[in-house]
Length: 400
Image (tube, rainbow, N blue to C red; front, side, top):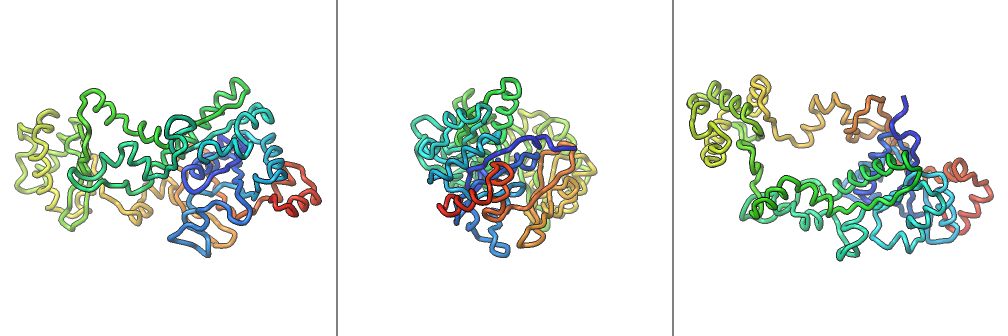
């Protein structure tokens, strides 16, 4: 059975993380993704540390599977002509340039749409294609800061905390892929191409949906509350007897009552918790949050993490260990869902990487991240129909 996007060809003009992630997501769903890179250097993440396998950056390897690599110099006329030819045979063009670069390179939507009226041109940038900030540089930390994420991460009255993974870039990449899928769906009805404009800042603001709603309704600015939750109580991390951690998150009344019953039944000295009048209602737990969290702090410290893991399962409690990545990639659920995969790389051998989280019922196939320019000649011959002599002439003018 073919993958959902097996009839889609994507030209990827992206670099580092957000854009390459979007290309990887589309490739994982079966699209033919052609990563177009600058001759001699390629995606700058090819040289990005700190970890390398046989000279290949682990950073690049993480975001560029299921792609072909083609080198192409868009700043020379011959290279631009090749790109126009590729556009005739493509469905989507991805980029994460700063606004204005597409126009300077002469590959903006208005030009590409004349070549292929069905083309979808999808851009990811820090602040979007318009507005007062559109020309500013932006990276993950900038949009985490400006989008409010860092104001609600960490603990009150302590230094602002940058999230442990690049949510600005990752959110942008997912938004770009989602925008492409929406444009493809519309094109199926209209036959017409589309311009897709994704802003990393917009994505960060959208991720603040519930906190934004709270602020807009109340005028109260949300503050960081560590591992807690503004409205679900208890929802917090707790240290265990063996100095590890678990997270409990009771978002509904029944789960709180089961949690209280579990603690009352299994921890000596806490038998009255399930009957404590202060915690019978959500309002009561909100008003007495500090007392409840102190009680649970004491209770959780009486058992090791493994004991709590078993009790959470036995009592059907929404609780979990706080895993590091060595725990994550050995977790039986993660392994069962094929979220750790091995791919055979042409120079490294077998490499491990995270799997595809979008399960569609088809068998998953993963090709290795490509070497720089690995597929250039194949693409020129098979898609553009260039002869050996024509390819040699492109090489002579350093167009590829």
